[in-house]
Image 1 (spheres, rainbow, N blue to C red):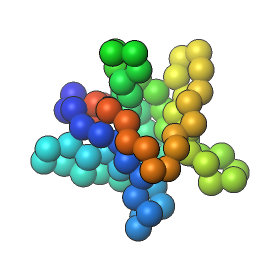
Image 2: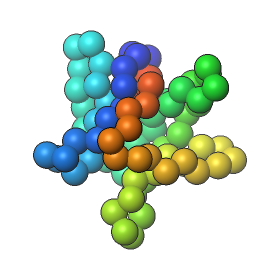
Image 3: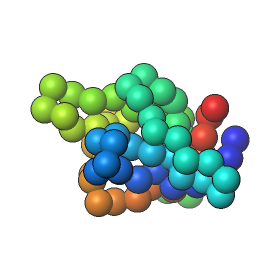
Amino acid sequence: MKSGVLRYSKDTDRWCFCGVSLEYGLQCGEVIALKINDEYIEGRIEMDRQDNWYCIFRNAAFTLRRGCEYMAKSIF
């Protein structure tokens, strides 16, 4: 897995994983690990009917806020 950040791109209207040598636009259903309380937890990125992006984890969902960056690790 590669470390980086998850940030929203206004140009592509999607969330992108940005690592040292890799930038990748995510699509619904793709898996990413987000850093929560000093540990990385795998989740699946999705979009609701109002164009809000969120990440589904095993027991919870987390709304991704445009303008925020999240520490992440790529699964691909």
